[in-house]
Amino acid sequence: MTIPPINPGRLLADLHALRGFGAYESGAHRLTFSREDIDSRRWLADRMREGGLLAEIDGIGNVIGRGPGPGPHLLLGSHTDTQPHAGWLDGALGVLCGLEIARSRHEADLPGNVDVASWADEEETWGDFPGSRSFIGDLDEAGIDAMANRYDGRPLRAALAAAGLAGRPRASLQPGRYRGYLEAHIEQGEELEAKGLKLGIVTAIVGLWQYRIVVEGVQNHAGTTRMAVRRDAGLAAIKLAAAIDRRFPDLAGPRTVWTLGRLEFFPGAPSVIPGRAEMVFQFRDTDPAVLERLEGGLRELVAEADDGPCKVRLETMGRTTPQPMDASLAAALEQAAERLAPGRHQRMPSGAGHDAQQLARVMPAAMLFVPSIGGISHHWAENTADADIVLGCQVLAAAVADLLAA
Ligand SMILES: [Zn+2]
Image 1 (cartoon, rainbow, N blue to C red):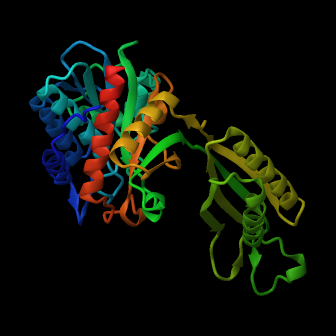
Image 2: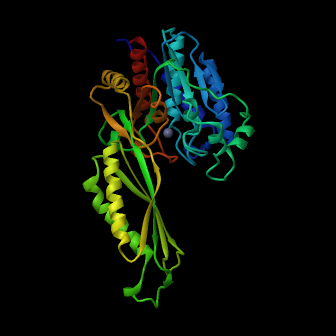
Image 3: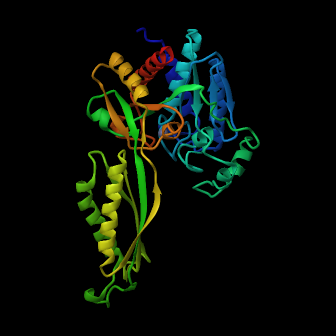
């Protein structure tokens, strides 16, 4: 099997050029539909055209470059927006690897076609995967009307109009066009690096179940209220959090993660016994049975806490379904990884959400991870060794070749 050539220097130069849009420290601050983000989308569409693709920015901000020739077709992509003050690679890696593969195949006149997409707003500045959900037909006009900027409340419609995208058609999936969707991404964790591995083949994207836990007690004077008669919502919340952390290891799978990301006391004054406490708690796993078991355990612990001096209730905020990746696409990635980096790859779940979980609802989809130095992501220090970026792109290119030839 010959490995199709990519141009590593050109790939890295493009990544560095994209980094220049909203450069912040050693990373990038490129929130969806900011000036920098719009400029970067126009730049990307131009780079796609120079690479021989038919490129457009659609009505929700997706940048899509289509290969001009006959099929078979594969779709490659990720996202180029960022979190605030974030890293330069994140989804940019997958988009520009896709572009590099599409144009190097075009230059070499190889059969088959690669389309490339940068999905709008994966980082949820405005909503829940608006770009990739629009493409698969899971976002209607009312859904767009309902989206607003999470930082300043501006309606998405206003941002689309300001970006010159209002009234443009939204790209949608042409049924039967693709053999599948492949997304390269940085790992955003430390596992590959810790194990000395170069590539992760994603088996599934976790489901994320999130809850608000509200504890109601009685607000009173911290000096005059005897301990025996207190109904301290703050203390009850902390005891419950500790009980969850003690119980969960028995209910969890080997890769389950759980996080108490927010804890607030009301009124939050040093000399006032908290009358109310609120926590936001989440857990993630790829196995629906594990998620159900964890929720059952959580409900039991909340009920036990509710028998104490305070009232405790659980509100479900969200429960996403774990999304398995396609076995045959994952196998193609694994075979390519074994050819180019024998023994230096592993199968692993993705603990983070990605556009691939949306695409996987309508076509075979798979993901490839490259190592994150120090496991850092969503921070400007995020980085990956150049050699690992290039290797990731070569593995993706080899898998693409196999899948288009099959
Ligand atoms: Zn990302």
